[in-house]
Structures are given as structure tokens and as C-alpha cells.
Length: 423
Image (tube, rainbow, N blue to C red; front, side):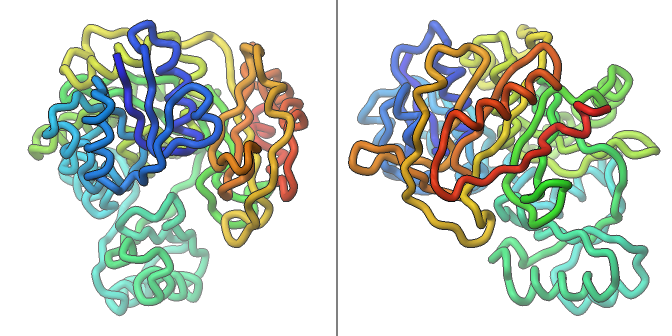
């Protein structure tokens, strides 16, 4: 089987590594890929939003299976384009990907089908939003309606902060057209947990839990990023929490989408808040999370292609997901200055240190080849992942492995999973 993976980040590298382990797969293509993915796949310099070129490339290479990984092309309908061209495609349709593409849609869906989430209101007009804030209880959460690379969320502690936030999102368009509409919701407290699930339209299979660290600096300080590190599993995701979520959140969401005529096939990422009143949905994503994928897939025992094919074919009820009884921690090595301004083009040294080490992974997120050298090419450069019998062991190993590689401007958080490991 020939497989084409769409995307070029750390998530796609983790997917590619899992795909490469499948005995069904003879050849992997990736567009656009990166320097790490290029070690196991043939990469093509085609952007994820260049739908016609991607379709032509898939035809040229006579691929058998397409995996659409990033949010932008999914929300814009790439899975539909590939499916209509005759390719078996893993990833939700445009109609289903709205689950992530519109915060207002997802909140309205949860309200209609009684799926537990924060109280909220939706606004198309900045003045109306500001007027609403006059009677709000603080803190509040402001969310740009559309896709904003994981950064379109503001937590505001005062009325003044919230007014400034509304202007930033809706008037200054800091997040572009994602801010044409906005959701204002109540601020929830508790532990955050990320849960990835495979879905075939009717059935759902739950992967192991994880927790992301979004803030740029230690102690959860600094700006929101795409993710500075993650660990799996979450010790707070208990059997009791899992049972509640399966009944009232996971299956309920799949059933709701089907009832709305938006049958979902692919991965639903559930961002959860474990509040004092029980689990609540923070957000949905219509694809694998990044960097959660980098700690979840290395622990999965299943052949990922078999699972993905079951999602497409509607036979996921015949699959039993299995995960190793261990833990994984991923520490993101970023370019100093991320998520704002940062320099690129620095040589990355020490990558060979990961060769032949089963418990260690170096997932490339922002890298490329330049004059036969691998250089930095993004804000998040590498995801250094390690597995261990416990979270503490995995964390110790991951941080040790961050010292194996070096590049100018290298930056990382030093407390990924620390609170857990000290608990």
C-alpha cells in the first residue's frame, strides 16, 4: 500500500512513524513534510492548502490511502476533494470538520444535545459583546470563532481586559477572519485533560489520555503557543471520569454530529476540564492534537493503518485499541522568541543520537534541509519524546535527551509534567 500524509509538523512526523510500522505499507509520501519525515517518506514541496496540486500528486504517485492531518485543509474540505477523486481518505469531511472550524457551531451543538460545557454567548458585533461584558462574572474566556492556530483564546480577569480583548479579536483582527465572530464563555477551573478518539461516523474508540502545556514559559507564564510539551497518560483521567465522558460526551458528540447530517469520520480531539462539578468540554479539534500525538501514538500497539481504514469503512466496532502500560513525555525545543518573532536557519546538531533507541523519539516540527544540513525552519523545531515505566521516569529521560541535540536559539520549558511528577 502507498500512503500519502498531508502536513509537515511534529504531529505528521509521529503519524508517519506509526504508519511506517504497518506491514501493510510499502511506500510513504508526505506533502510538504520536513527533514525528519524525509528519512521515512518521499516528501514533495506542496502546501497543505494547494488542493489541486495535492490531488495531482496523489494521482501521479497512484497512492492507495490519504491521511489529512492539519486543521486548515480539513476545515476547507481537502478530505472531500481527495475522496471525490477516488482516494480512500482518513479525515473528516468539510461538513464534519466545522466541529473545530467554528467555536460557535460546537458550542451550539453542545447546548442542543446537552453535552456538558461552559455557559456561553456568541457575538457578531463588538459593541454588543462589550455591552454583554458589563454584567459578566470575571474572569471570562474570549474565543475567536474560527481557526487561530491554537492561539485565539484570551482569559480576561477584569472588564477592562475583556474590552481590550474584544477589540483585539473583533476590531484589530489579531487572529484574522477567525475573529469575525466571537464566543464569550464562563471561566472553568480544574485539571485540563486531552483525549483523542477514533471515529467511524457511528462508533468511537478512545485513545489514552494526555495533557498539553500551552504557555510559552515555565510555571504556565507567557503567551499561549501551539504547545510546549505534553505527557501521557494523565493521572487525573480516572476510570470514573472515563465512564462519564464515554456516556455523556464522546458518544453523545458522535451521535449529535450524525443527527445533524454531519457524520464524522476521523479523529475527534476532546479538550476537557475536570471541574468540581464533573468533566466539561473545553474545545473540540477535528484531528490529532499537536504535540499530544507525539506521546499518544508511540504508546499505541495497534496497526494505525488498520484502525484508520476501519474509520473510513465504518467498521471501528471491530477494533480494540491497545496501549502500552507505561508513560511518555514530550518536550518541545523551540526557537527563542516563539510564538512572536524568532530567527530561523540554524544548523541542528546531534540528531544521530536517537538512532536505534526504542524509548526515545525526535519528532521534527520545524526543520528543513539547507546545503545538506538540517536547519531550523519554524517556531517549534523538535519534539523530544521519551517513554518510561512511570511519568517521572519518562520525564527524566525526555529532559536528558533534550541535551543530545543543539542549535542556536534553542529554547524550552523546564517543567513539562513537573507538577505530576512531584504529586
